[in-house]
Image (cartoon, helix red, strand yellow):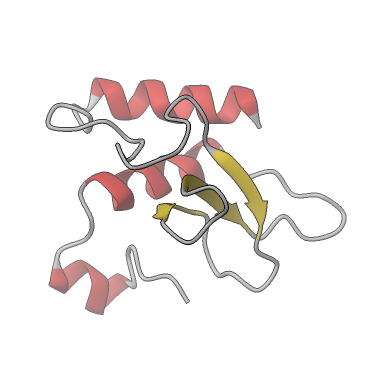
Length: 101
């Protein structure tokens, strides 16, 4: 997981996704952490600020399932992209990009 997240983060850096703001929301209790959570019913891996988390934090949710399935570099990059930029309305409608169920 760490290696995949590092590769996805490096790719996002290279694409300038962090040029305007940092990934971790400034309201996070600990801005050095990204909390990983299992979301077995989720359709995609996502990264978002959870204001009602205890404590408020940036969350990385993924359908890890059983046996464990670690998100790929591509899935993690897409989660970063969706948190930082988001899809255009056309991409969301046509491809379902950045649409979390």
